[in-house]
Length: 270
Length: 270
Image 1 (tube, each protein chain N blue to C red):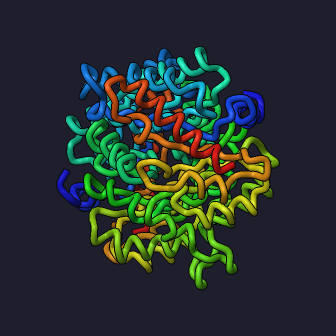
Image 2: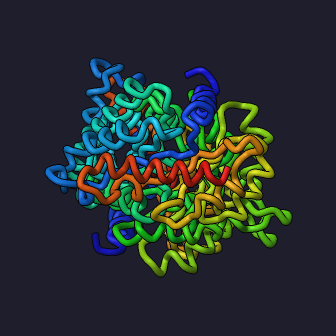
Image 3: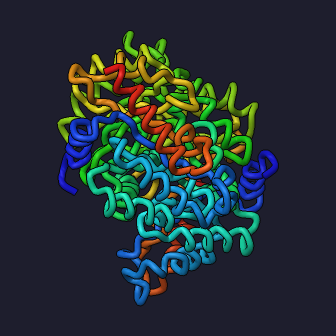
């Protein structure tokens, strides 16, 4: 994959679809509607319903591989990614896998994300250092965990190193070093708006993937105020459950309506 | 899975098989011998050959999931784990997946490791903090990355927090907190013998998984001297490629011979 395809697709979506919203694909059969309810073989069908109902209002889709792997549904994940690439080829795919390994093993995880699933970007964990990220950057875009959205994310990520929290050290390394090697973005949770502002100040125009609005409680307007670039773009704001399992007789239409409302809430703060 | 099954299986292997050796299952079809060469459908067959040839001289097996995931061979990984559990039920399985995620997603990765594959332990990344590790500990044993074996592992792991390197902070958190919540071990690379000694001093009798002997160049005698407990046990020393791709007309016998030599080199330093 040639470099920076992911960033270019994103920039195009921000400009033409006028959306900062990413729909996270976290398919939980226990929450599927109607005849699909509880049926693991309906995972791809459910995801494709959501994708087709929301593609025109999003800047990206983010399948979470754990939902597929837990039930042996890798083939359905292949179908979902293939559907996005063929039916919505302008919408980038972020495979949320949070991989992190070294050398040959990292290269195999890159092959999994970029060749097998055809993702444009994959989320990776920085704990193992630059030489664990290089094999991914050689094949596609990475979205590196910086400050995650969970309640306990500060336990290690906020520890001070020479007066600088670890997550800021990761952000600075991404801006100064990894961005010279390839297509790099960072993850910063909507649940930490102050940290989001600090990371934006460190990384310039780098895209930021922001989970934690919707079910996790992050506020869309605060996210945009603290995280957007001067041009109002630069953000990939993920919502999963609030959209996927929106209440309504037609689940796809209900999802579309919540997606539109979330996109609009984000845009009204730009 | 009831708590501490992994630790009890390990302790039993240390005592009865008198081995600190873990064989890492990193199946690369490009290195398979004879008719299996280059054939991804032979992955399970190759692994089972190695397993049956070495089971009596190891304390654990460690399949690396990336080798399976890159080529869509999850079903073969299921077969490999099932073979170990049925044919060699006293040998624990460490699924090397280096997972790390939050809440429901972490619970799904735990389901992948412990239910789908039937692993006794899974490797996890500490960057997201205690609340990302709890969902794994609720279902089985974790082996947390502490100081990894790659050349660049110090980039973040060795940064000082109040005078203490991050990897030592992780080790102390594992000893003081995570070990009260479940079955915890740590990963420390054989390529960092001084750090191995320091971690052993912090964690008491906790098992340490030590990759990096064999192809990565770590010295078995130094690993045992610096990492073993007072009773000479406490280590799970992994070797993958040096054993799997040992030279010889009969690949399984060649692997067995290298495994025996590595076990003996480790034991001679106890």
